[in-house]
Length: 476
Length: 104
Image (cartoon, rainbow over all chains, first blue to last red):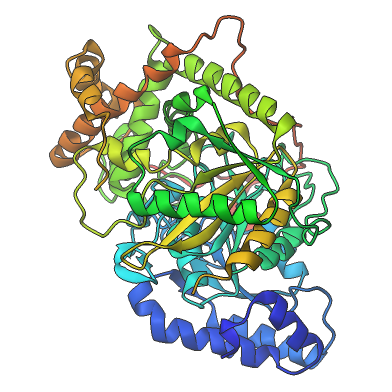
């Protein structure tokens, strides 16, 4: 079954003409047909376009890039010209962009085969994958459990062998957490590494686009093809980055920091803690030094993240007013009522919560929470910077828990947000991070870890990840 | 579900003035954000916002004197592009563009 192969294995077969692109694409389309009715990873499947492209590539014969003929899926908040881009929202359910995001164009330039648009939490707000207007995304390891979010379809499709790779976006853990819940490899690159032009965001100071794959090497291959300066994105960085150059160098003598404050937290499930500690042993066997270090500023990260992201979302999502595009309410008597009813009908409950919270923060002047959150962000960044002078990576669990079951009751709204405690510092600081599986919990659900590194040091993360994966094996 | 040892902190916060402010302001926030909520949504959001606000005090524990806030972590460079003029022939009337009416 060619759809079970890694990208690097497919590259060899395609290069040696031992497999046709159409065979590969058909294998993935069959898997989507057989399985996606229960997983719900896709919002739109572009079957005809995929087969047409595959036939064209087979006719052409020449492969112009490692990604030539490799089938992938795109999160549905990334604009794809003439293909629905819904952000999993009623607000944009019929929206067809007139242009494509740079990141999608880069994949097209590399002759990848587009399989379709992937389900997500509405407007990338949410952490479980259950807040899609269309249908909740289910975990391929156990469909009564969530896939994680917001890039839920991106992670679930790769785990279910419905895509060789996918693109997700990450604002506060939206690539890292679903990758962990679904047992796949997800990269949140350094802020500015991948162009965000044409990506529908909600918190512009935090967001990045990144790849999700089944192996670390595959991840580095995809990132190599989508990264790079884009003059259309004001935050795009001008740097030559080679993500593969150190991947086989081994880890002897490298130092890993483990934050004491996170180790002490009793919110971490027992199985997650066990797998996390198992990862220390694997890294030590690979020649690393693992030190427990204090990072006191981590305690501010969750609140700083929610203050900043909510405020930005209140501003960014103000554009959805029913005037230029998207949903518009049917009955209204004046312009104010048009706005209010359109937004009331078009947005889901989690998006409304975030906008209202952000609105409160933007108008609140007495305590100036937002200003305080931005200062806490600076303190956190300084702390990471100090740490990275001595350590190559910081190692944490990906989430305090494994994928929760649908309908599992939380005693209050904050419990859900505490799942993001390990991911939010990464976005606040704009540093790169790699999420990868370690083992499974007693219910057979994947447990993941996050490796984070200094700005622009994705190559070190791939080096650690590749060595770890070789020692532990790929999660099955 | 997660066993939060910190749960008692929420209960302390629930008695603070911050919560009262949010409960009193929810209708005003709807107006400011231009979102009309149903009664059911209003109740749920009111309750959740109260929990959210309990988190906001955390950064106040930090010493932020002489610390400058971070709004973005990388450099930014303004992007200027030429306007893209689409086909508007059918909107031309007597040499002027007639903009379609949005709100009747």
